Every structure is written in C-alpha cells, then in structure tokens.
Image: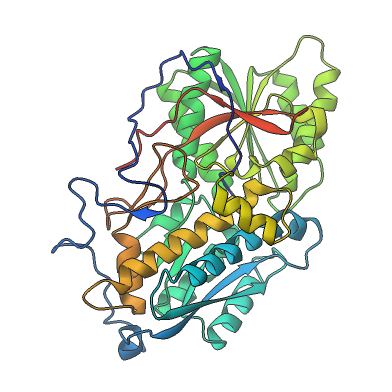
Length: 437
C-alpha cells in the first residue's frame, strides 16, 4: 500500500524569519492565476518545440485522431483501503470538482470532460489492473494517479499504448525522464529540489555545523530524497550522522529507526515518508524525545505530509515541524466548490487534486488550440511546452515545462511550519524559486 509521495499542500500564514536572506530567484506571475502565460523566451508553440514521436505507436492513426464531443480522463486512487482512502479522498474530490467547474465554464469548447476514478486500494500491484480497466472503458488520458510506486507501475504500459499520463501525484525524479517515458509527466515538485531546499534551510537556520539524521521510505522517492540530501548537505557543509530506512507501505511506528536516530542526538531530522506514516513517526519521536533531557531536534517532513489532517493525527508531537508547499488552499471558486462537494476539512489535499485537474485542463485547452487540434499526441506535446499559473499557486509559482530541458512543471517551494494548536501553517522565509526555468 503506497500513498501519495511529495504532495505539496498546506496553507501559509504569518511569515517567520523573513528577514533572513535566501538565495532565490523570485518569478512573479506573468498574469492572473488560472491563465495560460507566455513568459519571455518560451512561446507556447515555437517552431522548434518538443514533439512526441508517434512512429512506434501501435495505433498510429488513433493517437493523432481528433478528439471531439467528449473526452474521458481516467485516474486511480485508493478508495477501499481504510485509513489511506480517508486521507486521500479529498484529492479525488478536488480533482472531480475542478473538472465539473471546467465543464460548467466551457473551458474546453465543444468537449465535455468526464472523470472515471479506479480503485487500487493504494496498492501499486493493483494499479496496472485499474489502469487497464480505465483504458478499456475509453479513457484517452490518465491524470492525477496517487503514489510514486503506483505511477511507476503503469508508466510502461501507458507509454507503450501512447496514452498521456499527466500530473502524476508523486515527486519521483523518474517521472520526469522524457527520453525513457515521453508520455509521462510528473505533477509534483521533484524530491531532488525539495531535499536541496531543506539542506539550504538547515544550514541557514541551524548553521553549517548542524548534524542531521535521515529517515526515509524504502521506495523510489525515499531513496532519491536521501541521496539528494546527502549531496546537498555536502555542498552546505552539513554532517549526515544517520540514515535509516523504513517500509514505504507501513504505518506502524518506526520504533527501532527512531531509537537509532535518537542515539546520535542529531540537531535536525529530515523524514521522507508518506501519508499516515508521517504521523506515526512523529508520535513515536515525541515519546523518545521526551525521555532524553535537553534533546530538541528540528524536524522536517516531506511535502507529502504537509497537510493539516495528516500532521493533526500526531497531535502536539507535530508542533513546530517544518515542511514545504507550492500552493495555498484558499480561493473563492475552490472554496465554494469544496463546500458544494461536502469537503469541510483536508483542504490541503483537496488543493492538490484541484490543481492536478486544473493543469490537466490547461493542457487540453492548449492542445485544442494547436494546429493539430485536440489529439492524444497534441495533448502530450502541450504538456511538454507548458506555461501556466494555477489558481491556487503561491505568488511567484508558475508551472512551466520545456521539452527535454525542463520536464518538471513545478520546481518552487515555500518552507512552512506547523502549529499543532491551530492546525495551521506559517511561512518560514521567502519562496525558493531558483530551480524554475
């Protein structure tokens, strides 16, 4: 059972320590949120823009056939997997709500969008079965699949079938490999960027002599986070004193790993976990920390944990925990849609679903306006030549791709701090946007 990794939600509030300088390149929105933009040097349809090679597609005529009247977007999420389904239900609700909004507003003229969400119980071994069912049901695009292992489990079949796999809700760098998987587009800030942001923040707030321990899941995102952090720590002169790995599918408190970390009494702990595992880790750490007088480590959790509902499970043990996000979860259209959908909490998770659908629709609109019109091929071409500001993007965040040169639409992050009493986040320093193209 694998939950969404790297989900960068959470709301911002009062800025903390904003006087400290961070090396960052602030990119102001080129236009209002929710609109396609044309930043300097990156027109939407340049003559030499990246274009997918369809010569290997078995259904070569079908991949370039016009899509008119209706388009089915398939997705996969845990819907019968106990706690994991509860945690990620708002993601599905947010995704569906934006598609409903797009239909009502006629954002893809002449085309009615449908959404079919298959259930894989959060188990990546079931994701291929779910996706095959979606394709059999007529899905022309898949988008917003939850989980690193889940997305990777279907990457090959979707690329072989030449079906666009958009806004994969994972931060794995492997979902940005355009050469190996040209039909796949990662949707979250890659973990390599997140690890570097954390290392630089640790050096800024704790000093370059800080001792750091890592706790990561034994999946693609966890190992990539650990490797990237070790590299960034070296550049920042930090010392990594411990690296522990725990099963990605487990929500059991990592007792042994926490004790091994505690034995080193590091100044900072960086944990790359997913879903409820974030909360069980923090709860166990709180127990151990209370037994060691004078040990008060700064704790970072991966952006997939940056949701009030997830951290709230840990109670006071989550107080002061740092994480990261690139979205806000408050905007009138979004708020009204969530209220209508019956979502009264977990707005951070819903914001991820809403944004995944919004970017998907922006890609469809751009494809429809291309000289080829709306086809499967033009959809992935648009995804690789995108410039868009989502409605929930923080100021300075834009989703931009540029063929092989920039495969990741989102590469800016805001470090945030959780307050357990109010179950809210505050900003720590300015937005880090130096990794945007």
